[in-house]
Each structure stands twice: as C-alpha cells, then as structure tokens.
Length: 305
Image (cartoon, rainbow, N blue to C red):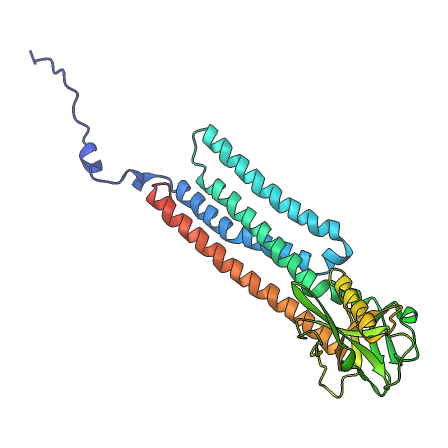
C-alpha cells in the first residue's frame, strides 16, 4: 500500500513562470490607456489655448464677447471636471495622477489663453476694430474746422501746409510721460486748438520737445485717432497745462498719432497681433509638451506608467 502523500504535486508550469515579469502577460490595456492619456494631455490643453486665445484676440471678443468668455467658462469647467474625476479615483482607490495632471494643465492653458488673448485684443485689435468702424476725413484744415464736427473721425488727412507746432508741446507725467503737441495750419494763433498729436515717453524736460510718432517726417500730414480710453484723461491734462502755459484754448481736443499713412499703421498693428498670437501658440505647445514629458518621467519612477 502506497504511503499517503500529504504534499501537493508541484505545478510543472511554475518553473517556467519564475523570473518572468508580472506584467508580461497583461492585456496591455493599462499601457494603451496611459498612451491615450499622454496624447490627450499634449493636445487638448494646447487646442483649448489656441481656441480661447484666438477668440479673445479677434472678432468674437469684439462682436460677441459673451461667446468668447463662454469658451473660457467651458475650459474651466473641463478642468474642474477632471479634478472631480481625480477625486473619485482617490475615493475608489484608483490611480488619479493623470486626471489630476490634466486638470492642472487645462487650468494653466485657460489662464494663459486669457492673458495672451485679452492682452492682444487690448493692445492691438480693439483699437483696430474701432477705427475700422469710424469715418475717414480728407483735407481737414485744423485752423478752420472745430473738433466737434469730426467726433466720429478715425483717420484724418489734413490739408496742405498742416504741421505740428512743436513750440507749444507739453507733457503730463503719471508714471509714464504723456506728450502732446497741437496740429496747426500756418503760424497764426487759432481760436481753438482741437487737434493734438500724442505719444508716450517721447518728450523730456519742463519745456518738453515733442518727438513722438513721425514728427520729423516732412511727408506726415495725417492722424490716426487715439482709442485708448485709459490714456485719454492724461492727455487731456497735458492739453490743459498747455492751455495755461501758452494762453491758448482747446474747446474739444481730439488726439491723434501723427504719421504719413494711417492705413499702413493699422496693417502693422494687425500683423503684430497675428505674430504675437502665433508665437504664443508655439510657445504654449512647447511648454505643455515638456510638462507632459516631465509627468511621464515622474509617473514612471513612481511605478504608475
């Protein structure tokens, strides 16, 4: 009678499995999901940045601002949703890292897009849209026409003989120096000096010498309207100082950038806005790519990649 064997027979496949990595026979689903997470984290925040920064830079911000800012809200909502999913993963004892990372990079993309798009709009495009909606007046004689008749002027082409009266330049300093000089036709005293060339940080001293825009271009005889509402009060104060200093009147002062070709200047603004947006878009892609690459390295060292 054979002795009863209390030990189970050794599994013949066990020896074959020794030394083989545990994930060698995994389905590969976890790795594919991580690859999807990597691709999503690279492209979704970048696409979000592109869409929001474009909408805040161009016509949606000007014509339908609610739509432009709705895109911002949607971006923030996606970031919050991803953060909620990360919290749910923690609650269910699952790995939340990619959800949390996606929430952070989405939030950064939205905030950076606001900074780029709104800054681009305020610096270039808002004034450009306003100027395109305003009138252009040819052959304006500043000594004969009062500013009140041209309140809707965006571009003004002055009559022959018009120039800057640099002797009556004035400035007002408030962190920056706001410089003004009257636009005149002839040397006679005008009843009201309503047209003023302006610039910032381009005049010096108590008796400022106006050196703004194309002041030394003999072919300059046009003005592009100043549209920045936040700068206008300081130029008005400079004009008031000029009125007191030179015993002149400015009943309805209007402010212009003095130049030869206003249309060319507007074209350069549009090109600058597009260039700034393009460079910002490229920079964000590179920044976001390296953030994702860094996350992959960190997560792989934590054993979750």
